View 1 (cartoon, one colour):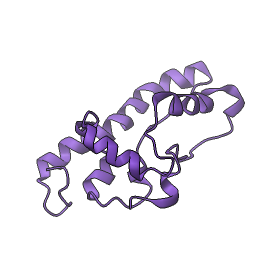
View 2 (view 1 turned 45 degrees about the horizontal axis):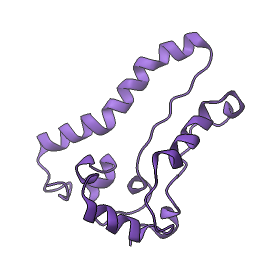
View 3 (view 1 turned 90 degrees about the vertical axis):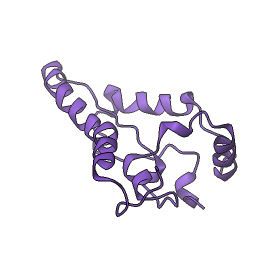
View 4 (view 1 turned 180 degrees about the vertical axis):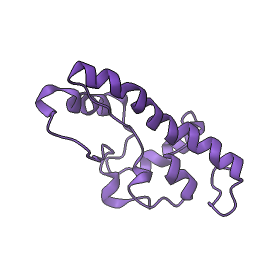
Length: 128
């Protein structure tokens, strides 16, 4: 079901996936904006997937919505992903958390509107 192309995907399923995975980020930032503006500081950090940066052979819907959580506990899938990652291991939360914290610090306040890949060199090779 998740590997459907845009042409074959049912409209209502596409709408649900987009609302959950894309529109929720937009609406959350809308809600946070007045609080951040009033505070005079703050940051919004969106976390996505390398599939949004490079072609993914699993289909355009996957790339559009940055992956499905349904595969996170699938050991065979994770082993395949690890073997295809240039660093040969899956990223851990601490691999990403330090980077997520950095743009929120005052020292990084001039860094805005950037897409930065934290992905174990995956964007070097893409999905192959």
